[in-house]
Amino acid sequence: MDTNILHKPPIHFRQMTWFDRFIVFCGVGFGSGLSPKAPGTFGSAFALLFVPIWLYLGFNSSLVIILLMSLIGIYICGHTAKVINVHDDGRIVWDEFAGQSLTFLPLLYLQQMNWSWVIVGFVLFRIFDIWKPFPISWADQKVSGGLGIMLDDIIAGLWAALCIFIFHFYFLT
Image (cartoon, rainbow, N blue to C red):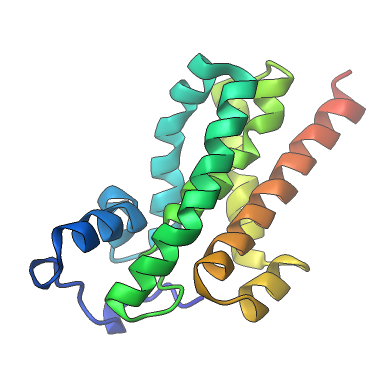
């Protein structure tokens, strides 16, 4: 994915319907994806603001909402890409919201959520999202549309979550 948005066409919100504006605003992470450098990292960092919500809701409710966020994200990301006419544009960061949130599920389940682990989860997610080992790279290259935009970040979030869970299981129990 090309994260250099300097050569991307500008997003013209004034030329959109209100519905398109709302969806694109969600797709670009409420503006967090409009950062001129590293929009994916800014989107993932913005998603850390959800951590208090996940803590308040607990594991089961958070799991349901993150799954809904992921399913709705397929439409949001696909529609945003269509409206701005650029597939998997770096400015689309709703997928980072879902993937980053998935990373924290083991911490919620194990009731080990603290800011040290949040930072570890953030770093792990970014590593997998940038490095794109298999099957993340496959999803990024072979799956198109909104599902393709979402799937690589969902898998990256699952890989990061698995790493956290394994570390807790083998080293902290």
